[in-house]
Length: 378
Image (cartoon, rainbow, N blue to C red; front, side):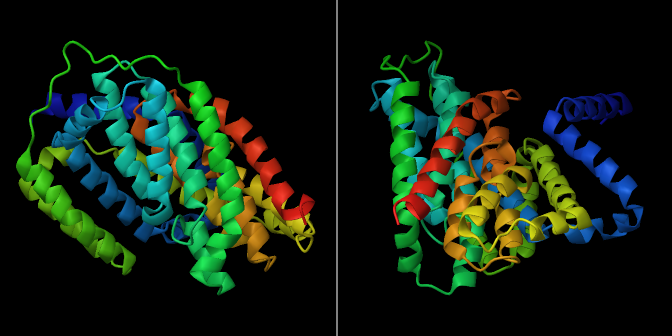
């Protein structure tokens, strides 16, 4: 690679970083927090949940492998031949995302459904960004049902020591109402226009080696990650891709990984501020109503996983916390890490505008539903 080519690539990389608004906000926040407590700079690496970053890296890479292999493109072709209208496509994809999230977790569901959606939309005139937004809402609702649907549920399930069935039974009314409302909204937001396939839409060539490699590595990677060996698992996946398909590594969204690293540092620095701790202690979290709304609001600031962990330090009512942080996944995009993953996978830098247009009203509706179930119907 020539020096001119290297400078050109570095220039494009820096330009793309500057155009990433959320990334720049996180960087600005880090600068401010560092100025307030310069003595903590040396501890920044310890604030990052590296197993989560490793798991995210592996999932991004394996999903990108499936996408680049042409598999999702061909699957999109097959689905288009069976689905007649945009409304049918949207309801199918939203339902699939929600169901997958109950067992595969919300982020894994997105890694499967979003690339498939984008592949389908490249073949048709369907609005990919709006579909991805609704899929993000779907995995937030669907993953709330089971203890293994998302990280905050897993944490609260372990904390509560209740059975799998009891946890599901408690969450079922809220998830049922949220999904019913979301499906109605989906039916209203997407029209009955027939899906039109582009004239130049042809089946992509299939890279059988890349497909086989990605599928073969997927389940072992998930098993190793579940056994708390995410670091070794991602190292093995990276090595295989580097040897056999290095071009896939170049197409990975490395900025998304940087966003997550910065989020861990910024949010944990904020949570450690004395003024934040004092504020939490003054909220009267022994009262269930206060705890519920604090879970919603806190999720909007630090996302629902840290919110659940933080609230458990001040209250032991897991049932109310679970409702609060599940509802809190809607609203602002930071409410759930799944939102950030979906918006980044969409490839649309203005996707956050569409997301908030639907997610903020969804937050208000879900908050009212959760309140009614917990307090008004007792």
